[in-house]
Image (cartoon, rainbow, N blue to C red; front, side):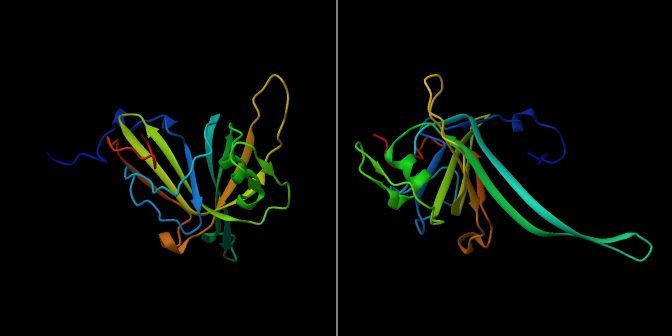
Length: 199
């Protein structure tokens, strides 16, 4: 059959973004083996902080450009001179893994009975993986090898709303993926689970 991609519209490629039932966000210590496709199960080192809010995840890109005009005012050069990428989401669960993302892995001790130290963040680098379900039985995996928490939202406690932990991670360029800040993999959904340990 002839390849007609790029020659016609296809509504099967229009998609909503949903999290997998096993969780949207997974994290591991810096240096953990990176996934290289969308469907292979993650290594056991990866942990999930649990549910994320209905707002999902926002992937933002910020660029600066330099423009050069000639003496007549005609633009002769316009180049991107800086690039940065962030991922923002809100965690809903209060558990050890969520708190380690919020406060730092060395600031949280215990599993059920937690002790959490509030202190200056150290700029700890973590590996983050986002697991998304796309429409049409497809999956997307976003891999961030060098993610650092750079913005923290307010935490509100009241009787009418869930407690949420609003976090923004900056994706730093990583030599592990040829200097990219993140990498995406998209594939048809596999029957193989991507959860590290599923019984």
